[in-house]
Amino acid sequence: MPSTMTVATVLMLLPVAIWLYLQTLLESPQMKSELVMDMMPDAFDDQYMECTEEMEEIAPALMEREMKISKILKTTWEKTESKWKKVKRKKNVIATLPSDFKEEHGRAIIAYTDNEFHKEFNEAVRTAGASPVAYNTGFHFKAFHYYLTRALQLLREECEVMYGMPVYRGIRDVIFQSSGAGPIRFGYFASSSLEKDIAEAFGDDSFFTIHTCFGVNIVRFSHYKEEEEVLIPTHEIFSVDAGDRNNSFVLQSTNRTCSHFNCAYLGHEKKAECIHRSGLQTAPSTGTSGQHQHQHSDEDTEHLARDSHSPPQDTKRKAVMSSEL
Image (cartoon, rainbow, N blue to C red):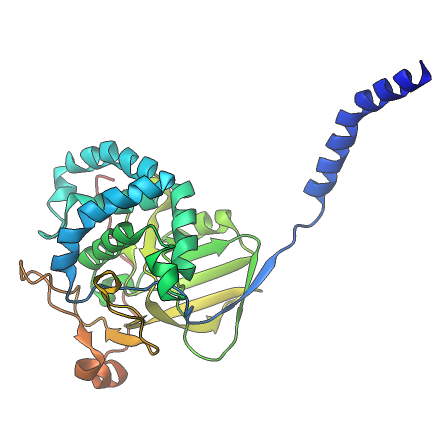
């Protein structure tokens, strides 16, 4: 009998012990990781320059194969169909899209705004460029990466428009540090907001004020329009200055990008050094519509980017969102 009473007592007290343990965890300061900002050399950063025609042909079948491998890709992609239909019904939105902009491009942006999906996708992007094996066998978002990258290229505004509107990015539980050694890239698709208070709600352990040239306002596609989201691509290069409080930074676009990959799915290998491109034009040409001009390479524009095309400092903030949204 005594042993039985002891067991019963333990069972009775166990929920209380668990509750006290959980309370201790909640009240204790959480460990914060520290990261040094750099050029993120292991990120997969393909811009698909001069191979968009081939990728448009390849990507649909590739997407089907990858959805059989990645459950989260399949479920997220399938959910975007109904949202895309709603976007298409807004004629003032569709009328503003470039002629090359396809359903898959729009659905890629919609999918990205799914919180669970973009976390897993970005985690893969951060490391998929580390080696050929990492990309070829371990990265199951090849088609999606193409569609999202291409969507941002097609929707990109001129630098003079975006740079003058500071956007903000708040992060919780990660303390970023600047090495002071030079420019940085995010190395993944970085969400930011036009509204500072919204960004602060996401976290303030590290906080960024960002002047972007390649970021795109995606509110018309987003599941969460109230976030006023601007999405910044993996490859944009920024200079770093200290902000006005601890662990805050001001990032200023150099109006240039850095990619170690170009058309990787077609067999092109990673370059040891960055392929730099200047953002003097809106987006690369697909070779079909002629609507957008090809971005200039280093050889064509390095002296222009260095000597005469600094991002504007005094452009007034103006909205780029549809008035209906």
